[in-house]
Image (cartoon, rainbow over all chains, first blue to last red; front, side, top):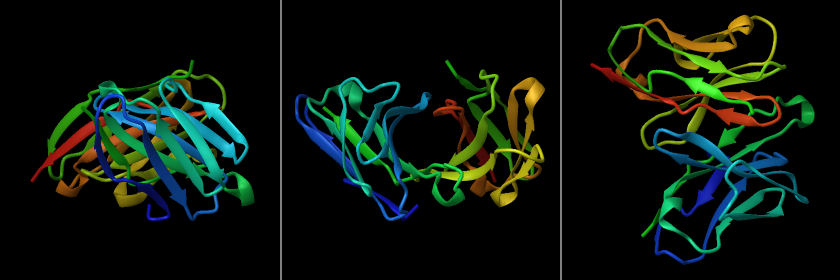
Length: 115
Length: 110
């Protein structure tokens, strides 16, 4: 969905480096999410935020941190990247405002490789 | 904890064949149900969703899904697939949070 953008789209880095993945949305949604996708494992939730001052851990938050800089921006950081964090990372947004059904809409993904 | 099961991770079929992908979930309360599709190299797109009402839900591209509460199932179907349906399909269930199944990789042979 073009309303949800992620940068970078691809990144190769080395073990121990700090990496930040960024997500921006123009949908006006208040809720934002970070997932990682691994082959055969589906999508797993890393962190989610229901508003600017709200940050919640998902099922696999260890090794990650997030920042909700504004309603439209939600960044994911890997403080010290390790090879098993190699994955495809997706940002998603949703809302229940205005009668919306909280359906999540996904960004194009960031492919991260940690060497 | 809530879980979502998708069976037959890899499905290979010919064009015009019928497709059915199973999805079962473990949570017994009120749930919202979704099917997403991920075409090769692309992000997840919503195929269809069920919140309430008619348990037979019609989505985009000729897909439909049936919610059977007694079986905790939300199976996806398409009567006649096309080569362009080659993709990975994910079932997702929401109670408090959205939980995804591990996906079905579907390959349609022309």
